[in-house]
Length: 110
Image (cartoon, rainbow, N blue to C red; front, side):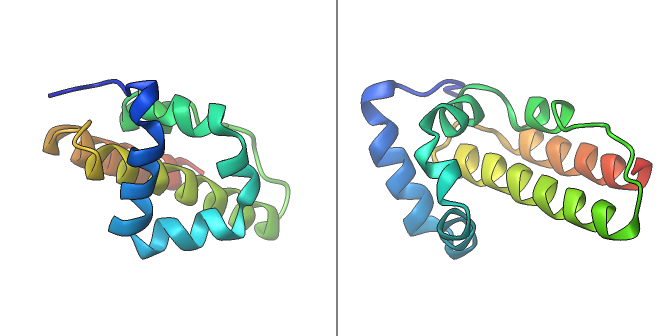
């Protein structure tokens, strides 16, 4: 299983993400800065989805609204990472399930 992204194939891999997931297309449409920041998407592609979860901020929210906002943003980032890697065959089933499990733990700790 490949674990990294060939830079020359990045555009086709991003296109595969759009074709394979309406959710990802909607999120990237709502957050064009993420797609414009190819470095962010490229880093998502080069690290495992589990590492993406581990890199989520651990700041303490001071209000329910801030907590909700932080968790929604984290969910979108993790889902994009999982979808990108899974649809481009960069992640195996173990990585996908482990990332989802770790994200659930992150949410509970929040």
